[in-house]
Length: 187
Image 1: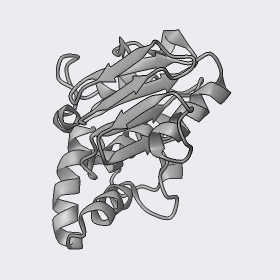
Image 2: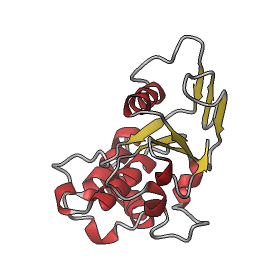
Image 3: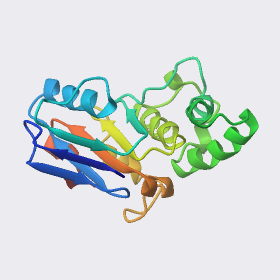
């Protein structure tokens, strides 16, 4: 299964399907419900008894704050995501990671550490890091007070052209606030 298929998951529509290349949003009734769904999708928790959960592998989670390692630069974080998944040389990983980071609009912050960049840039770096694993599903966590994911993913690309590597993954935004789903279709 490429992408994501959810059936009979409590609190969701009866059937949710997100194909590779699609960007969808799920608005959850509470933060606890959102966290539980994230845990199910990332394999940290078992799905409910009667639910059907089919996910293309690998799955990458981008936490609301970006999920970066604080002791690595932005480029170091993106490269780390690549090396862990593909077992390639650091030089090859850096070359490919530079392209991904550029597609995410991070060229000017590659040598900075996470605490030295804005929350929006940390989120974009988290997306770049996830993309280097060539996931079939990217799960984006959301949090109030941070830039919306839809605006970030289109910051450096026209609305009809998100970063090219996103076409190889299904992208699911999980939020509790429907006003933060701009740029995503309802799942």
